[in-house]
Length: 117
Length: 113
Image 1 (cartoon, chains in turn yellow, orange):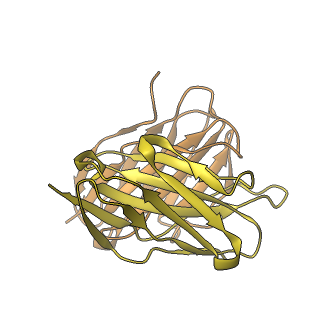
Image 2 (cartoon, rainbow over the protein chains, first blue to last red):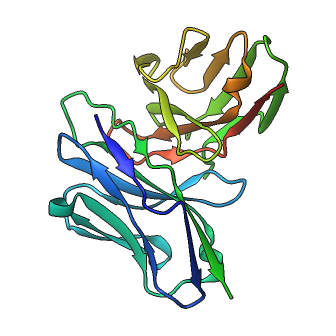
């Protein structure tokens, strides 16, 4: 069974500071990994995804994440936080592909990011 | 282009009532997923459709929950005899293929009084 652990339900940073949101996964097969962002009263929006190509993945809005198999981690970073980055962030995992896999996503509990002026 | 849409955006019902939640996927997307997001939690998988058929319904919590996608496009999630514990945001996602990126709708917030 797959699982995702997001360390820190709430992260607070100052505008311009480094953003680091942690995600560790458990999977019995090589995974696909995702970061989604959810703004208030909006649906989930894909930030970036890892699908076994480059281990450093760049996404939208200046975010990136690095897949580290040895640490079973996929932490999300952004060099300089903007006020508009305030949102909830979800890490998710799916089976790479058993034959016939449907790629359903298993999500972490989310990390709420606040950005202070 | 149009994204995934869900109606209603909010639904308040009484315990024991029947509700239907609708999802309109992105045109041409063959795969459709339903998830449920309880307060303070990440979304949890309910059911997956490939075309018209439910390929995986392992996430449905019990037999009060049922979903259909009769023409391979719009899907309806049906909940019978609602309970207060069913209160959550129900999310729908679609993807072009089973391996494709899932695009989420804004969700339906269900409140059972």
